[in-house]
Each structure stands twice: as structure tokens, then as C-alpha cells.
Length: 349
Image (cartoon, rainbow, N blue to C red; front, side, top):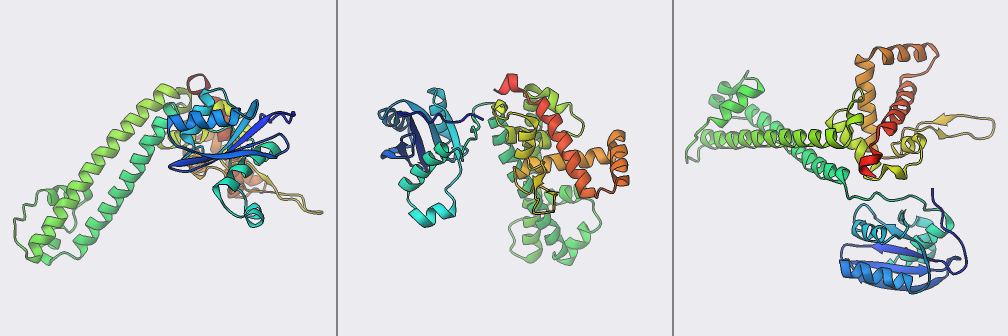
């Protein structure tokens, strides 16, 4: 990780980001405040913010809150201008209890977090194939949730439907049920049978449209994944969902991750020291990117069910008195290392 030089004269910036304005603070190498000012979240505002920070002296680094949301555009602008950008988490509660809460206080805290070395993470660039995959993932996830909801509503409506309708639909599999409901032509009547058929027809049409939507998105995701990360997709157990989640966790610039251990920690697959006094032990990491951690879990479950080498490993570790959660954690760590070595740095960096 890159550290900020604490040389005299160096300026360290901090930015508290919002939807319409960013509040910037300039500090010296000891954390003294040189100035604060607000800027609009526009290209012109980004240029003015950078000029404001540079006006105090050589700019060493800028800590930006919310580089994955409100601060994404500013982080890209600063990086394109050759500025070293550091991702900063929101101030902790102790700081806010002592100094209160305001945008200016948060901006100063962001700069001081960089100076103290508390904030060192390089943000994701959000400017390549992984960002495109993230956009597709958002649409795919919402479509799947809507499809599941519509299916549940359809089955619930069949259960409470008038007996003539229920008798017609009882015992049909999903494909037959959807086809039958889509074929209804209930007319304009307002009786309970007509209205129930009307509702069932529209639910079936909605389910069919969402199915076509998720199929098209999955096809496009698979094409993107095969283009930008063929080595990752060749790993046993990796599919469109797990591959997308792992690439999103790594970002468009996975070179910011220094080692397989750092990637495992990012995914919450690394052991955490939990020793105290005479007790020396490790515990599971319950932090990290939970979507990426879930992807590792699905890969491990797939391998435990189908891969001979993984089955043999599970048996050997079981004989060594390891519990199933501990074995899964070990396998997650191995998979994280394998995925890290397959990340397409030459394409995405």
C-alpha cells in the first residue's frame, strides 16, 4: 500500500461527497487545516476543487469518501489528473461525538485519516468492463426478484381463485400454468371469475417478459465475462453469477490488490486473530464483500459435490477433526487464491 509522504509543505486533501455538492478541506502534513470550500458535482466543479487544493502547495494525496457512489466522478477526475486518491470510510462515532457532525468536519476528518495512515485503500476506477458487468448485475438481480415475486403471487392467486378457475389450473406444472393463464381472454366483465382470470393472465405475461429479460442479460454477461476474464471463467465452479460477483469485488483495477491474502481479506475469506492471554486461536472473518464471499461459498459447494480432489480434501480434513465450517473456510481461501491469480490485470488495469 502507498503511504502519504509527511514532508513539510505537502498538502493533503479530504472530500466529503454528496449528490449535488462536495466539501473539500486542505490540510498540511501535520493535519492543520489550510482551508475548506464547497464545489458543485460537475466537471467544472471538479476542476475548481482540484485548483483549490493545489493552490496551497504540492498536492500529495486526496482522501475521498464514497468513491463507489457520490464520489465516483470526482475520484475518476482526480485520478485522470495524476492525483493519488485514497478511499476513506466515514468518520467513526468517537470523532463525531468529540467534534460534532458537519460536511466540513467530515472533509477534515477524511484528510486526517490519510495523514495518519488510517485510510490507505486505493479506490476502484469504475471505468471498464467490470463497471459494465455491475450495471448488468443490478438489472439482473432486480428482474429475478420481480420474477420470483410474480410467481409467488400467481401461485397464491390460484389457491384462492374461484373453484371453476382453480379446478382448471390444479395439477399443472409451471410451464402449463403460465401457458394456460396467458391464453385467458376474460373480457370486460367485473365478476370474480373474469377479474381473477384477468389478474392471472397479466401475472403470467409479466413472468414471461421477466424470464426473457433475465435470459438476455445472462447471455450478455456471459459474453462480457468470456471476453474480459477467460481464465476466471475456466475455473471449476465459476459461472456468470459467481464470476460477476468476484470481478465486481476486485474492480476494474485489480492491481490495487497487492497479494492473494489481501484479496481473501477483501472477500471475508481470511482468518482473523482472536487470541487473548493464554488463548491462541483464529476465528472466521464475518466482514468483507458479502456478495464476493457468497460467490466463493457457491463455488466451494459445487466442488464439494462434484470434484473428486475436493471430496478427498474434505475427507482428509474431517479425519483431522476439523468441522465442516472450518473446512469450507479453508476451501474458500484456496479458491480466493486461485481467483486472484486468474484476475485479468492486463485487460482491466
